[in-house]
Length: 263
Image 1 (tube, rainbow, N blue to C red):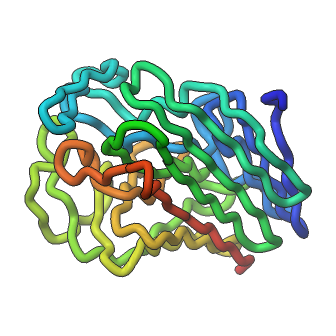
Image 2: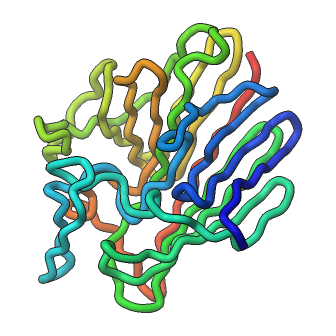
């Protein structure tokens, strides 16, 4: 099928998916109000087959060292699938299934499947990476850009309780030390062993919860226009420090659900 935008609807919620632009969620409107920052690089894009930065763009798999393009010098950032066009496997009024075949510069053959399912009060995104060939390390995550304000209201408030914060070095990568969570501003990875649970509140307008069974979330609030809450299967540089293996028998799968209510 072609890669034209897809619109899902449920109740007064509407989601735009952009298969041709990295398989991203291009928009999420609730009651006609757009929650995601608009623009070709924004919305919410899938981070796969890795999340955040890889130190110097290099990762090791056994004896092999692989070099990824330095798209955020001196590092490689956010995977390769957001740069490609995804295919539409199936779509209904409130659900769509997109697929993406991993290609070079990623050195391994594999397929990514992303399912977007919309209800009147929630969007669930599920992603899996599978291979029928060599096993390889991988990560899954999502990078939403939520608008800091909605239609001129008060700025969003972020609430979460993390067990730890990954100490960030001068190179923006975790040092390996875990520290007590620090106050905002953040471009940091937090650990939530019970699962990601972050609440965004636009006072007097909307509350939205980002949840996932995964235990890492990167929170980024250093830009004026938007804030990011990024659930992922491991910390930045995780291909080197905490690899999750995709094998022919065992795909890697993750889910995040955003649930909202008016306040």
